[in-house]
Image 1 (cartoon, rainbow, N blue to C red):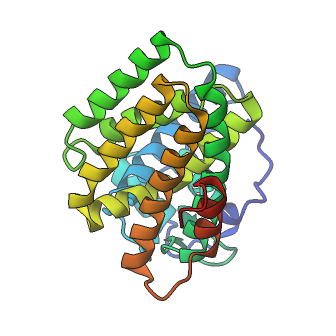
Image 2: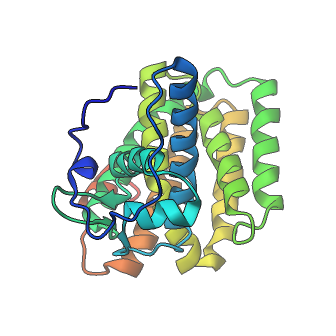
Length: 266
């Protein structure tokens, strides 16, 4: 682990009365210590991410490294790395000489993410549908059953893990670079999915019907129908959240992508 001072915005923040923070850990340059530190930072990142996505840390909340380190019982070093990862994922805003804050929901960001996701995911499911096997159907059916069995409001992490697996199988035929892009967009959109679940819980019966329709299109090796189903499914989530948080915002990217990928059904 390098001793050079990090150039990231998180590292440049002033102390802000954080001088009495959790004790720093003496540096250890061994590979084992570095790997352990990385695992701890990822664990802290995961815990903070869950707190943000669940609303425990609502939009606009101020995040102090020292305070959160004490709260989670870790040192400042993994907390600093966790903040950097949260910033990369767009969950917090962190600028030099300012405190970090949980990022507010941005309609333009939501629209852009879902516009991109509709275009890429319809391409991916179209390609996957051409070579979908009986084994793939079984794996995807199992993920869907777990989604239906788990109460999303009681076990959100289990539900989202099954949901991620479901969409991953549906888009598995594309090459690794595009898979990484899809995974990044999927993770970015998880916050919006949770907002949709909170804002319109009754609509999730329709969401399950859309998941079943996607599975059926893949079972029939029907690329066009798979693309239409996933485009409408993704657009419905985006438009539902936007109608709730920013009814005046015109979701140009989402509607344009839906018009292209959803066979003109906007």
